[in-house]
Image (cartoon, rainbow, N blue to C red; front, side):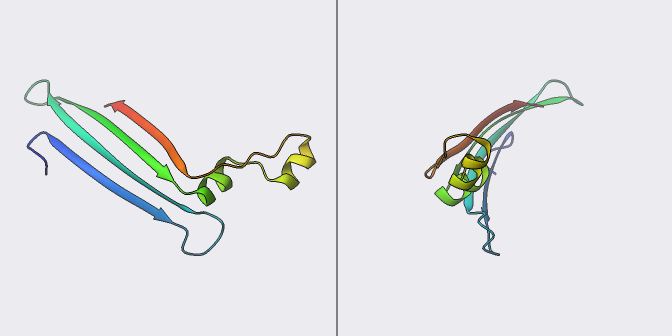
Length: 88
């Protein structure tokens, strides 16, 4: 634990079956703010990174699929996959 009210997490997903899934990793931090003795707010911030294979599989448009629907192919490299901020 970082402190009594702070927590953090780290995660990693890897396609171990070689199904074109790729790999992604992320990290986040959470702060628990006490509102009363029985109530609290959780404030969180996290970010994720993905390799090029993951990005192409989940967000890209292959040349074959693009030709089928009349769109341009779209291929991505590795990079920031997402950033989230939340209040619970």
